[in-house]
Length: 495
Ligand code: ADP
Image (cartoon, rainbow, N blue to C red; front, side):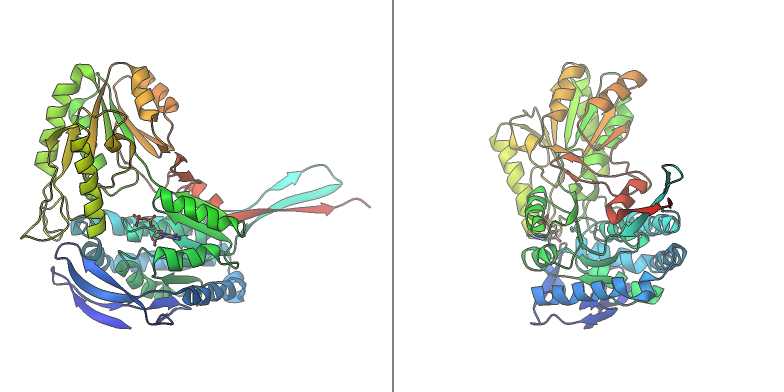
């Protein structure tokens, strides 16, 4: 049920392998397993148990019972907040182990996992812990004959399905508001990156959460994920992942009319106007697409550049990529870019690069695998210029270190290009003209706009998309509303 592991940085830990149900690690009912691969060496790290639909049923029943049990149901918001704060403290205490596991399993740089990803978990848990006793209804004055008020009630059992690009953070984004509001959870991890959240599950028990409040399972999407989405005792599904899977989930959830929140794909534009601070724009443009190996739903993967500064910006951007995007072992301090998460993703990204070349875009940088010591799912940061809106690399989400550069003539054309997408997640724009900045921010079809930055997300600010980028919001106060019902109570005061 567990295995002793040692990472290349010398860190040792006991890795749980089971399904975390009712605060215990258990086997799957048919002993089926998922192999987790180290994307640097292409070798097996270990195998974890994979939930079958029967195991999902077990986890859902555990969550259902916990939802009704006084040990959770009767807690005040203040007490729930205290449990969440305790969990945040334990995450902070275990930061190095969690960052090590994230790096090993996902391939992201250890330094980033330690300085950004683990702190994000702590911040999100503390933020929603603070809200747990400050999220209540209203008294609505309709005159002396009636006393009316609303109560915010938890939804019940929340099925939460997360992707592999930010395993710890995506879990925190979902657990934080769900627990704050008094729900119980069955969290299904991505089959590609099962390890870090299984370790964190141990901390959930240690923090003192009653059994069944948080259940953490691994399993394949089509099997465990689909069983969770269709389970009649699940009240809500929160999903982060691809738009294609999001659509399937929406259809499956319709069977029992579940409350859903979807955070799906993106093809976010970044506009550089002719008056922009070029150094600032080039720096954020680089981070906006090349961070996390390009595996970010909000990655600004289409850079739209005013024709007057096109050549000079492209040169500056290229220089940034060459200077900052150091590829290598993610445990090395100097590494900016590790491998893609899996062989399948690596091949998918290379497929898009091939399409870019075939469709006639100009390859400025990269465009090929970049194995380290002959191994690993590494891809050279890739820059395509002279991209046309009809091209695949302009329209489709690549989810890798590959960017499309396009030139425009007018503000109107820039907005048109920015909105020429089925997606509407993030958008960035660079200009020193304050009025234009706000005007364009309103015109862009996106859930989030960054002015003079990119992917500058913050746990206190709502995150989510429009169009085919999703439904609902996570983070901030807005993130809470995905996890409660408003009940209206009318009291007749008349004789
Ligand atoms: P990717 O294609 O990058 O792996 P997905 O959107 O398919 O992204 O996966 C995101 C999450 O959704 C993962 O946890 C995965 O297991 C889950 N998933 C995939 N397919 C389904 C499905 N049909 N039903 C429920 N969950 C699914």
